[in-house]
Image (cartoon, rainbow over all chains, first blue to last red; front, side, top):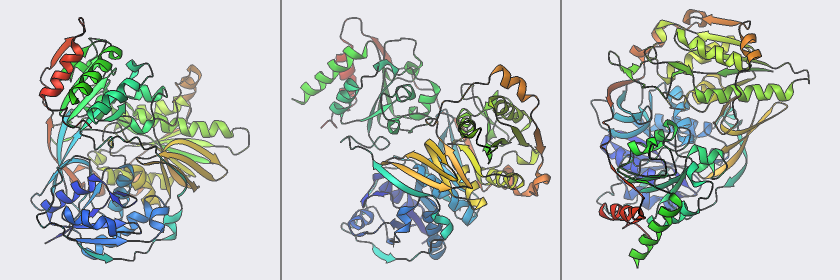
Length: 321
Length: 269
């Protein structure tokens, strides 16, 4: 069977949900081979095996983590050539897309980014992307080289393989990193404050606040917590300094496609719609009945968020008992 | 120091953007276009570096480079009006339908004909929105890249940026020459002044064809693209939802009922 490379996305050894999704997709295309970059692959193995990695290639060179993008692209190139990869799947994170970009040039291969679905096709995988602020869906295939595809979170429901406790075969592989790859260096890193809420792009429910909050995200956060949701923000709210940029939903922020998206005090400009339009169910709360967000809403409340949200939050908490 | 800003002419995001049915490429002729909003941030970043260093004799020159059809000259003009010093427009019918990999080839070849210490990009185009061209150009030119900057400092030949990632906010630095990309959080693009608009008319703009770059028509364009769009479908309009007006204070209860009916309350912790 053909080898499908999956670059495992993890934070300090904790495998992210997107990796389980990539492995699930990889099984449709061939035999998943996970590439793990980091010093201790051990704790990640059961998870990688659980979701179908037949083999894990562990890359432990410290340079791989000290520098951005380029060493990882060089490493993947070497691994792809060694295992004769038939396709390469990478998470559609900002670094993932840049790794994929450099890899495409190195391997002289076609690249598709931001797939929301990947299926096996006639020779090359067929991907689906959502474009133009979610107003169009396109299908695409790679026609040259080794297809390189970056995949968005929630593109597949992670499916565990039948064999429980499967531990994949591990192979350590020594890659050579060029000096040229060590030119853009991370000199400081400030981890984002943990919120205790789900990751924005992975959450089943997202509650976002905009200009209508007037700068107070307290009611948004309380409502989100009653639903176990992630919190997002519109560009207007971020530009006003009310919420960190990392939580911006929209064209220039995160694109989310949760089961439920609640837009609170957000008018629904194209910049915002681009980031949430493909959500399964959309709820909008806005005091302006003419706000374009209501065109997208499955359920809308024309009213003051400062009264509606706290009342809804209390109601939900009471139902929990 | 020489700065080249790579900028793209895109269909207006607020218009009804569409595809050409004959070849599934983005319709760039039938929809009004403009300089990509996110590339205004790139132009601004370059101009800010120039402004900060004016007077120290470093003689910073900002050139805007675009690859696109005839109308893309408008993108160059806008950048010149904002304050860029010169423009280069690569235009050739054979480029139509090129994918990101081919676009990066044309840009890299054009950059090869220009002098540069710093190449600046916006974070992504507002049409294709892949965000991969800066990394591809850096790869082709053998340059380091510091990307997705939400803050930029140039200190001698060191470029230092803040990069707000998914899990951390990093400080990343590199040494010129390099590729830089900036997000929309990096700055507030200036509006062209009347003086700027008048001055732009006298600024030099070069127009290059593929043959000027040593790129053959067979290396670019839709027919040889390394990825192909095989299907395009407009997303069906969402069915109209229920809208309630909170006139009697019952909207919150109705909202919770909607969430309960659709089983969204089960995941609460």
